[in-house]
Amino acid sequence: MIADVRPARAADARGIAQVHVQAWQESYPHLVPSEALAGASVDQRERRWDEILARPDLDIFVATDGGSIVGFASANTGGGAERLRDRELESIYLLAAQYGSGLGQRLIDAVLGDAPAFLWVADDNPRARAFYSRNGFIPDGATKTGPVAGTPVTQVRLVR
Image (cartoon, rainbow, N blue to C red; front, side, top):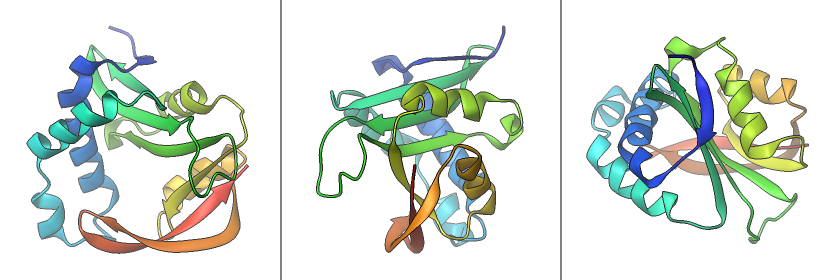
C-alpha cells in the first residue's frame, strides 16, 4: 500500500497510542530518563486517545504506511487562555523510520494548512525546531516548563 494521510477515526486510538509511545522513546532520550520512557504504557495512551478523539474542538490526522499508523498530528480550533492565533498545533509525531518521507509535512499541512498558528516545542529538540522553522514558525520569546513522560522539560513557543 501507499503512504497516506487521512482524518483520524475512533478506531485509530490504539495505533495512535503505539506511535505516541514509540515516537517519545525515539525522540526524547536526551530529555527524559530512559526508565520513564521505557515505562510509557500503550494501554494508558490508548485510553487517553479514546478521549482525545472524541473532542469536537480538535482536528486529528494520521499518517499510514501499508495500512499501519506511522504518525499523527492534532490541532485545536477552540479558544483558550493563550489564543495567540486561530490554530494551535497540539501534537505531531512520526516514527523515526519515516523521517524524510514527507509524511510529517503532509500531516502539518493537513491539520494547519497555511493558517496562522502557534505551538510549544522542547527547547532542546533541534530536529523538530528545524521542521517548524521550514514551516514559518519562529520563537516569540515565551517559555514554560511542561512534563514529558513525567519529566520537566523547557519548552519554547513558536508562532507564524
